[in-house]
Length: 173
Image (cartoon, rainbow, N blue to C red; front, side):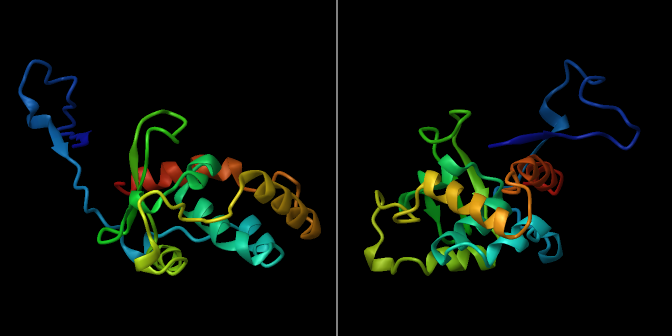
């Protein structure tokens, strides 16, 4: 269970109420779904290179942009990590840079497209979600697409990852 700080109407924070019970902590609901208008849209750099990428890299590009996941986390994603009813997937501690497992909520259109990659009867817990996807080849293709689009080679949006994470945290993820 995750917890967030609660501030009273008078502006009294948890620090001011030191020594009291956990009344100042509010459990974050794991089933939180943002309003559809709050779902992040791809930034201009992503849209500029999307059509120039080979088709096998387009969905991973949109997934990385929408979720703020690291490339290595997307490479390590297995079907056993996908929680289909709640439209989210787990980044396991084994593939996470921080070595802490976490849940990543995915926008419904992207989640549906990912589910269409593999029929349900062919999904096994150990099978990769993005079969044949490699980070090195993706980076090379992305650099070429950025160059062809007239964008700087660093247009892959690495700086946008922090912006997307901050936005999703402020919306309650």
